[in-house]
Image (cartoon, rainbow, N blue to C red; front, top):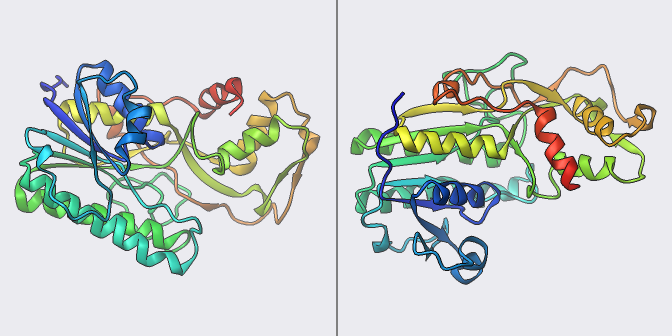
Length: 312
């Protein structure tokens, strides 16, 4: 696949986030100009542009902002990373804010994109919204997040539906990326992988809940950013799963981390039924993503090693 000429300027929401910061750096290194849509430009400047590079501009905007962004004129592509992530994933009280920010917020952003004549939108959805399956799911499999975190995941699904419809009605290129569970240095310290790394590197007993049977497909943040960059280069339309393609249970994850930390496997205490069926999120079939210049995500062990070396 031959790369297209890259856009003169790319706008990015969620630019100061875990994925966003790495994407901004990748775009910079490769000579792209970036407009970061951020809630607090002064804070974001310290994070994203400490050396006052002319290749980065920062604009105040958030998911609930209905103001027009005239600064998006001459922007060729938009990457929508920003999302409202509730503190309590299973609380019905969070449903309204999830809907307002992640679904309606996407509509507001797309309206701005249309006014600015942006030709390519990359909308980051989620690969954890598929109806649960032990087998690898493909992009045409059912999205039905009733089994876990339904309020957040459903709002992300709605945002992707709105983005797809916008592309069809405006004849613009829309790429939907469905990442699985993203991990790496700098991730939320309360997230599963981060907590297990800290636990293994402490002297605390290694405990795990639910029989260690919760399952997810883990993708390293740098691999996901690499895929976003390829999608921007080639202006690829449609839906792409973004995962490692291999599931891991929490027990397998903890055993791998504990071994790297030199911990005794006898230190692991498993709470709950170890014979219960595996539950959680489906592994992703990433065949389509692998077509992007031979994109190939690293194995979980390799990604975890980088976190262990940094103690995070």
